Image (cartoon, protein in one colour):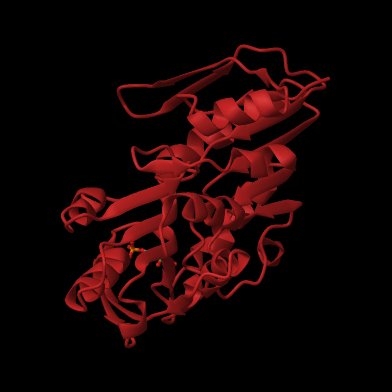
Length: 289
Ligand code: R5P
């Protein structure tokens, strides 16, 4: 019997593609926020003895976590066989160490919460930096998918003479995989974060790539400070107009608008988080699993 798929609200493009691709059944549920901001959740489909999958990207996680937990607990109370979570974007991965004494290692605590309630987890390009795999913090079976195939195909099709750039050491894992597929040249820059919205980027001599189109690739675009810092350096070197590719379109505050102020910049993201910049469809990776 096919799985029943739920989300917390609007059905995204990715939700609909996965639903179709795995021949799932759309689950019916109602959500409401009371005037005092408490959440109401009701499952209207029969989930008894069924495989249930909740598809929800965990950007803005603090708004989503309680209704998500209420949904999984309701499905279990109604007799669902197993409840899995497809979180195309997995939150709370960047605080992966206590950098100062007393700091909360939120990646670990968030993993504890999800592991306690779900039977399995599937996600795409989680921010694995100090952790080598999700299994270091999640106690349920996890599947990590990658957007590198879809991104390199998009670059091959849409960018003339590309030169791939990773804005920091952490981006090396994505940038290398993307560049190597079609033997595209690449460089990794050095970044130092000074604050939430401020980074310092060192750029090497790029004279040999003056005729190339710079393609910046990062996993998350959040404040946009990383991309903006790298774009400004490229501008100062009078490189060709750049393309910025982010796997996860988090875009906090006015990040997207600030990036668009760079002349002729093109900003493209994968559809793990629904956003106007989505141009790379990664649904195949989820469907093929
Ligand atoms: C950090 O290491 C990540 O790979 C991204 O570079 C970072 O999350 C981007 O954040 P922001 O857009 O706030 O600079």
